[in-house]
Image 1 (spheres, rainbow, N blue to C red):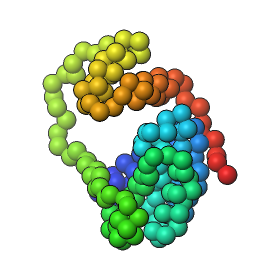
Image 2: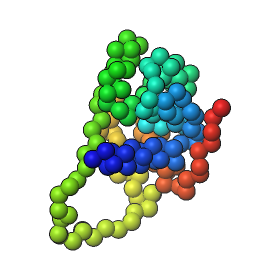
Image 3: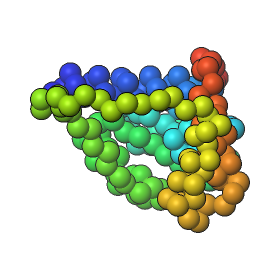
Amino acid sequence: MADELSRALAFVHDLARRKAPAVAPVPGGFAVLDERYPMSHDDNKLIVWSGGPGPVLAAAEERLAGLGHRLVCVDDDRLGQEFRPAFAAAGYQHETNVVMAFHGPRPSAPAPATERLDLEELLPVLREEWRESLPRAGESVIEGLAARAAAASATGAGASPVP
């Protein structure tokens, strides 16, 4: 079980690093930063797995300065619970992410037929879904999400370190 969790977290960390134009070290982890999408929590956040709440809160203020949000993902629930009082006092809301592993038999039915869609075909569908699921988001937010999807589908360049 611990091995599965370690693999899942390694995947999440690698994905965050690969898609971020900038990765910066922070106490107990790293920050991913993408100035193209300042409203995107997923593209601008800290991911930590050790340390104390004070240095992590200070790093969030420094690395996410100028953004309208602060997101700190703490991989270890025990550590997250330890951080909770200090983060709540600083105005953070606590949420828990759950990682699940499938151990059942694989479905025997054949996979349904699929076809690859070009981004030009997919973006109108995505925009409509975002308008429905994010009813208070304006068109600038929808277009920002579309630009992010276009960037994600392009060949990825490695993240550049941030001093």
